[in-house]
Image (tube, rainbow, N blue to C red; front, side, top):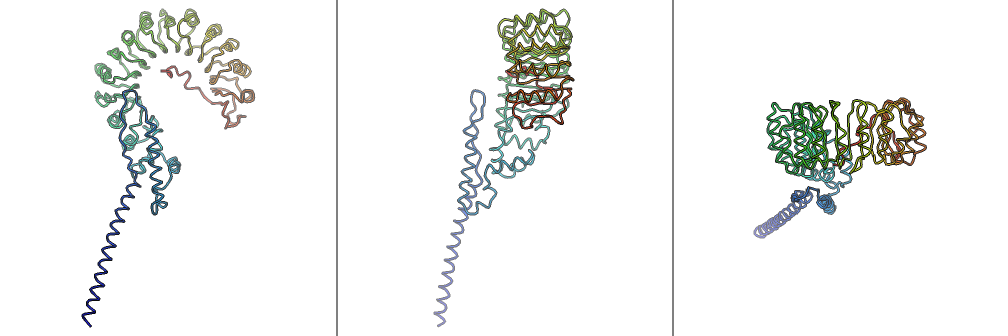
Length: 497
């Protein structure tokens, strides 16, 4: 009897062990399956970096669409898994777009670095937003956040801006740009230290805007010579106090040169640049260039045969300098000039009778013109953009400019009816800026809204008598719009380069 009981006990124990072993195996298999499923849910987003083309970089749209497809496929896979609808990874991409819209950049980055899936979501939704990293971004995040941002989207970044404050230390982040932003094309930055290895590794850089703050003329020269390591550099804007321009002529491939508003740049160095830089299309010679002579202007005209845009903001032009010779530039289309009084008749005649490319943009800064002078300038029928000051409005002359698209005028005595007539006479006008217009009132706004309701135009008023608190215009009007202030981008003379 006891023997049969013992055998039964052993049999039950054996069956228990088999069941336990079977359950253990099932648990192992289930655990393996869950691990694989979780790995799928984590979305392995470590994709291969795109191969750089010999041509200029452009983000692969197929790759970017692939990012979204991977996320959608993973979400589809999760929908068939147990409990997928209860996890945060099941949230649709469109929902994440809304969630991220409520977060500032720092919170977005903290979320992105907390989990690989969130990092993928950040890249998918925001890579286009941060292709252009502006000064408003770099001024409001610390080095850690900047590091995280560039590590995530650096491959897509094509422009980067930081402060041009003379005491700025943002150049310490150049190593981050070198490491994570191989496709960077435009850089704006203050540089104070005589070490430029990281800058010279940005081989795709085509445009550079720098404030230089060095201790000696030799360091300035060495910096400029070091820019020869950037083979694609075409545009250079220099803000450099006490730099005379020594060595700048070696950058022979430049198409755009702006030497800034600081004093000290030597006119002979400018002439040497014009002789060597045969491909120049845009030239801004600054405000305070030293000893600019007629001979310097002759060098510009003789050598800069491809020049399309010229900015003469020089406030110290000698009365004997015949600057009207610039009218002989065969491809000149955009001219900006600061004048200290009456324009020479020879300059106006030169603009009217100019041969070669037609003049399209003319910015005249400084003192107001005489009415007769502006009437004469209005004979340049090819003008598309004009900025000018005058005591009296030559209305009928301005209405002859049928190709005019942008007009910035400084005429204190212009009236409501004259401005309405001007809008009627210039049918292509899409931007109008009126400064010091003390006779313009809300009546003009009411009439313009009624007469030009279907016309797309933006009108700026500075120092007017318009009652901005009770404008008789719907805030959602998509056509005619009124702005209080100055049109800050009056004729972007370098926008086509």
